[in-house]
Length: 205
Ligand SMILES: O=C(O)[C@@H](CO)OP(=O)(O)O
Image (cartoon, rainbow, N blue to C red; front, top):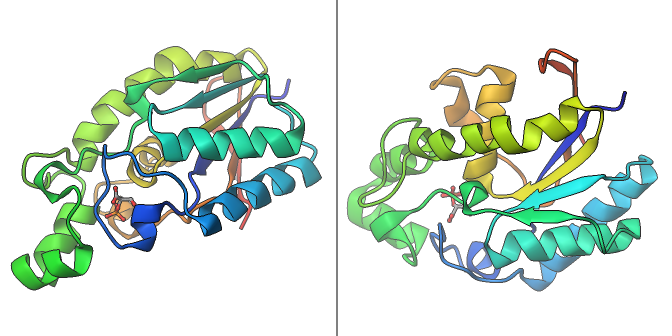
């Protein structure tokens, strides 16, 4: 029984490079992001991983990352589900703003709270808790069954949609998740027990 779940944040996007709040906006990968996605695919290949099914968001940067990973694995035709439940957290009114300009306007601390706290939403947007409220049910009902039946599953998504998922998988508190950062294009490999608890976690850094 394999029961493998791989989570990967998309490679660097054009807006990550420009330091803009992105959320549900839809920039593609930067050149570096394309390279990061290829590198993630090569790492997974070296580790001998192959997938039975893939999940991603409806945003280009995550889908492009998944496509490049599957290319490296020789699995381009893999069955893939795209769902907005896996989208990045909606950044609301901050979307499209420069992160340094936002710090200058509202202060370092307020911007950090909007970016990393568990339950404080950015103006007009989603908190991590709100994001988890759509990511977790999708995981439980749609993704996890494929893992528990012995499959090998890849999820290509976003910094905060994956932070929400990891918070639940790792049993982290609202305080503990604040300091968790996810690097772009770094696969995280979970092996699950039959009862859905985590048996093993490896970050392919
Ligand atoms: O802009 C965003 O949508 C996210 C991810 O790039 O940014 P942050 O690092 O603030 O979560």
